[in-house]
Length: 238
Image (cartoon, rainbow, N blue to C red; front, top):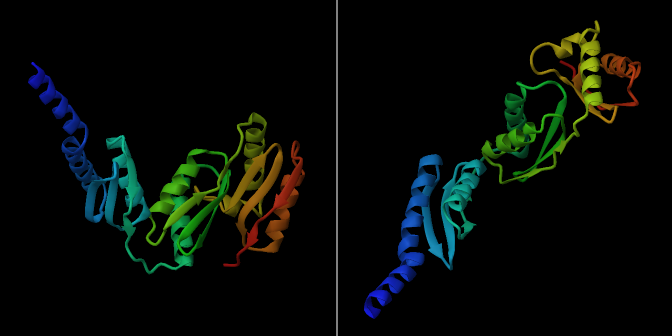
């Protein structure tokens, strides 16, 4: 009886350590291989932690591998996966990330503004959004771009406000129906973004000339309920 108990105790110890853990690392490795494109992937146990190694084509794959490992194990995860070399400059990265964000944002209104800055592949996202999900979309878009090493999300999610929503709609309608400004609202992605917080309006985006920028300020400033207008529109000549 004692021998049987001793055998069961040893088996339990082994199951909680190396032998069972080896199966866990194998399962983690299989799941990562199925859901990512990481080359030379290696998953191993080291000092009671799961260590990930290999080379990922993008930050998205690296982060996805870490997420899988954490979901599949209670142990801590050390992510030593490197990123594949990229030729993208910081300007290339900013353009590609912005393009990716626009792809997601097309399903939303012109009440969100996100800016992208990259320094040596380290991307910072800033801006203000009415639709909170766009903050997650922007981070996801950035992680997919080749050459991105990290993403810092500083996007501010605007507070829920019926009054601000009313102002957003009214300003959008007034500007979209203005004879000079309506071209900026053609299509799903308007080039003028209307940011409203506590009845204070900020215009972000771009117009083709200084005259249209001035008109935009006058249109908004003359509307009932607007406490202030800050015009951050940039002039981009075609």
